[in-house]
Amino acid sequence: MNKVRPQLDELLFSSMEGVFVESVEVSDTVVRVAARTTASRAACPRCGCWSDRIHGSYLRFPRDLPAVGKFVVVSLRVRRFVCVEESCSRRTFAEQVPGPTRRFGRRTERLRSMLLSVGLALAGRAGARMTDVLGAPVSRNTLLRLIVSLPDPPVTVPRVVGVDEYAQRKGRIYGTVLVDVETRRPIGLLPDREADTLAAWLAKRPGIEIVCRDRAPFFAEAATRGAPQAIQIADRWHLWHNLGEAAEKCVYRHRGCLRPAPELPEEQAEEAESAATSPWPTGHRFAERTRAKHATIHALLDAGHSKRSVARQLGMTLNTILRFSRATTPEELFTGQWQSRATKLDAYKPYLAQRWQEGCTNAWKLWEEIREQGYPDGYGNVRNYVSRTLRRKPQPVGPRPPSARAVTRWILTHPDALVESDRIQLKVVLVNCPELDVLAKHVRAFAHMVTDLRGDQLPEWIESARASADLPSLSRFAHHLERDLDAVVAGLSQPWNSGVVEGHVNRIKMLKRQMFGRAGFELLRKRVLLA
Image (cartoon, rainbow, N blue to C red):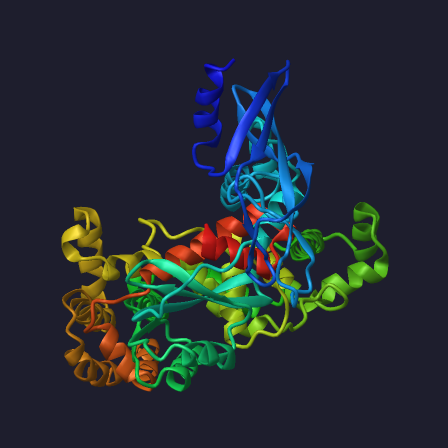
């Protein structure tokens, strides 16, 4: 054992000074190590004076890292010293050995460090399952308490800071994350996205030179108030995304140009006209039954049968036969409770029929379109009209036209990256619609500014886009760019962007899913800054 003890001492306590191993006992599940401290004196934690007067000793049993699959418990004898400073309020104090012990600690520092690493990586439940595998089982609450007890990391004042929002509770509670763009490390997490909170954070760090942000008004206001010396840079991805949304609205506005309206044959046009003048459409079960009865009754009367004879043959009352005989056309009988009454949907039925012929067969989409035009009722009436009326009409023969989103994607994609079929379809669309051709030219000019960092061309582009009267969404986008012109020009001229901030926002979502309902702000803040 005398030969083994120095090796165990070097293996188990190589990083701990002032500890001497006296014995080692190995059982089936536990390794017990008896050790004692060897320091001749210790410093008082209150006054800092060194003392070599020993008052007594006692045993501490900190848990250590497992060895060969067995628990390791250290039986460490530590001493109490008498403080020699008469003015100190503490008469005695216990010595703390750096590494094995800390005040009120029940684990060695290396075991605590391992548990902290597991907790920061996996949080509570998953971390507790991992500690079982590693041979140092603790509860999920213990891991969370260890994370919360960690101090904040030291942070230097960044030169380039990125700002973005994250959702603590989507749709209700939002916070702000701040990232050092140069080191790509998070440096702050704020509990809200108010301009005052962010402005106060920025004001405490006057060394900030560049602020990367999106075009949210509260971020712009906070950067102006909190860091007036910094250059504000609007993120290029958000600019391109906003342009894509405006382009899709423009394409949707000119969706009629994606495929010419089909011409109806003369017979179908006459049927449609007769159906429009009739209070009941063709195919309505009450209308068809009334037309059949009217034709039968008039055929029998023309054959010479009396009205009473017709009533007996058809099983009807005489008054019914008289009423049908007086009507020259069946449409005169379309009165009463089954007659079609005017509804709020009538004004929108021509538009629904046109969109149906254009290839839009989604009732929900049709309802959203007419709701934007002022339709006051709900989705159910549109769904019933589509299922009972429009679905009986024949679909136009020919290839399905491209959707507005597909055309938008073709316009936003670099021409060299489009496949041959998409390039041909886009060319056909642009030839049929001059307005979309103008839109494509504006989008490509903006793309050149984004990729080549030519922000000096932005004012000229804005003037050209605002002059496009047939593209109101693009004009509104250009108008909004003018409100934040300096930041947008800087974003299209400087190489900085908020991509690293978006990555940390995505990581925050993953951390929230790991902690489920336990992801309070303080715990989330510790994991974001320390993990």
